Image (tube, rainbow, N blue to C red):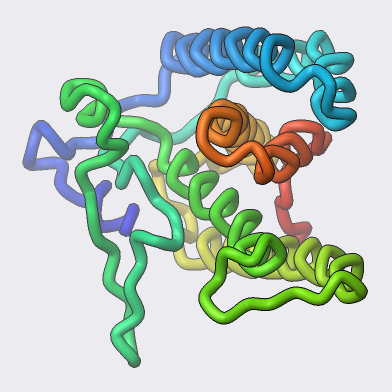
Length: 235
């Protein structure tokens, strides 16, 4: 998908653009502002939760971790991306996959959805989707799923294993298929920093969503923000 979106230098709306230090700064400022807003929301709405208390105590650590985005130059290009990439946007036909709904996040203005971004922002969206998928079963939201109380602990362990394994497999396949594509940072450390920032951004957004819509699901993104690094594969 990203190879196709980055392939049209002849169309201004799709032509890749440099990933500049100014854009790195904008990523940092945007996620930092989101962090502040999310922490304020947690203090008002969920401070009594042990997971929320733990995260609130690490606020300064999160800010320090986020500074990696502007501590050094990050290579690559900005391209038109999907903008709302997750498992629900991928349909299996029986022998192939079709990606749908390229309009981006519906709640955002069209002008914002048309902005060219780092392709890893889509990758982060799919990785976060993998985190949520097994919990649809754990929380009984999957059709036909009935969880016995005595099986809950084992299912939780299995969910964490599935999430990590599938995420690593997806990311490895994505990087193998992308090869040396110009729109991705060529340096593995730069790629890790950028992907980690996008994963943090997505999980912070999810905290606000869950507080407003599904409080029982809040531990999922809380655990993601507290993770010290990404699910970046070694190979």
